[in-house]
Image (cartoon, rainbow, N blue to C red; front, side, top):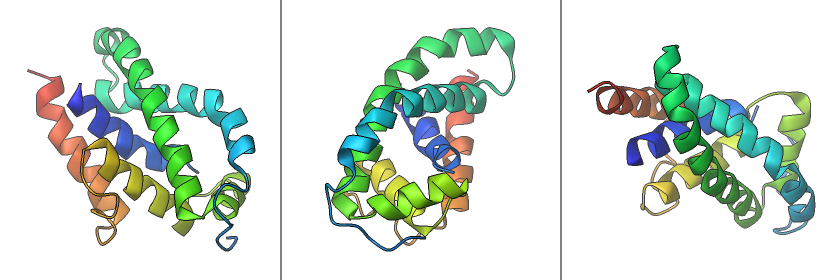
Length: 143
């Protein structure tokens, strides 16, 4: 389950696809309305990343990925709020890009999901995180 959490945290970078920092809490209601869609996209990203395209594995991963998508979406929304980057992240989403604000939020959430301080991954490039998490998840998913 922890391995899937790592995959999901790495996959979140692809899901959050610039405005300046907003006051914390300003857009939380809007973000909460988007949460079901975010969970659906996170669950699918988790299945896609963790299964490597293997149909049987995709089927087995659907429920665990769906279960992890809930806490991950809540973490992302909380970190968007806590970091004061609501407007920046929403602007990046509207523009269809993954920018600096989204990167900070994903890194903070990855740390939290792994039980680390939220700031743990701030100095690590997001591509390196995704590559490392994917490599770490591969052996555990294909015993």
